[in-house]
Length: 498
Image (tube, rainbow, N blue to C red; front, side, top):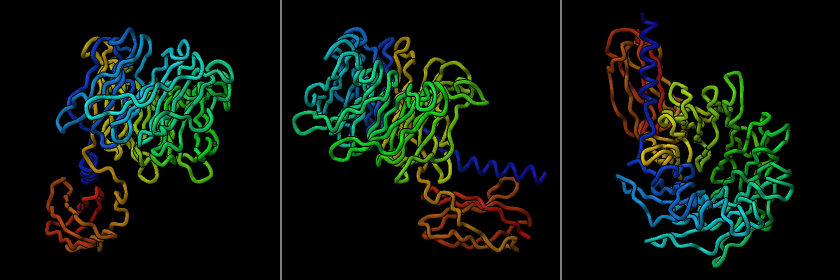
């Protein structure tokens, strides 16, 4: 009986520590009309209060011209910021979007625009003037027809640099792919350094691309590259040396044939941590389960950070979208499966935090409803406590009209000292009195003592404490001492009273 109660109380304590979750901020933001596909692409400002959302099949400016709308949060609800920004012509698919940190500058990619020929693509940049969105400079066009330039876009934190992926650039044959980076010189967008091209036909280099905060480093995916075997995929990281782009370490290959590594990528603010995934990865738990991996730069090479993260079950295909916080210690990964691993295209989003050794899930898994395909449009705010999640096949305003939601974590995110690893208590066993040594001073500490039945027999708070004297006046037996700090540190210790 005592053994059962011991595990019961430990489970209860774990629940009290881990009950923090992701809570939706404000109202749902819905697509306008059926088939809009609103929410597949999105970008979030650093403070988490501005979100830009793309709808690639919106028809306001012509069939599938595409549209981007921007919304701001007033503490209660989301309201539109400025007018809609429509594609320039039918079939532009103008929807790929990236915001500056302050949410006032925005790059929009239209990969099927015909500026320089059929399907050449282009990118436009807009600045908010306090009332509306005004274009900054002229369109940034593709260099040749069929490039699909703007299929991926990423903006630096200050809004003065933009990286552009062109998956069908043909420098080495069909679908070689290319990344170009442009900087604002005060009057126009000027290319920085050389074009970075894929290595071979069908690589689709630039399918995904993300810039560091200062715009001096980017990561790009080539999901069909063949570094080891057919269609492994790979990601490449480049750094600007003031004149040109040079490789930062070796390319990182996918692990399996046709794994599609590089389908989605992201990079930390300092450019030293990246995430990518291969959605078609398979293992003993099923086919197309998917796998995400995170890498850190150690000064000479990219080394994996923590364990790989696999999908939940066969068909989850995680990694179609990924995101990483500016600090590089929290990630988000999209999967396809619904609750109970239902194969109903609900979509799921899981967040993980690095605890110094490995990745552990942070909060609950966020599911869509059947058919929503949730988990697109992933982007963290600057602190990582807010995230945008799109549900592009949600049907609230017609079939596949789409929806965007923004969530905020309701607990502390810092992991510095969160495990209170130096906290001890002594003597143990104790006749009644014992001392808690926290290892260092904390500004505010709460101590609760539980008996074997899970009942709280003592609960007190202390200010500026490093050591705390406690006394158990109840009967002899085993007790549990839960320690919590204002910084989010938690630890539970066991003590025996003789």
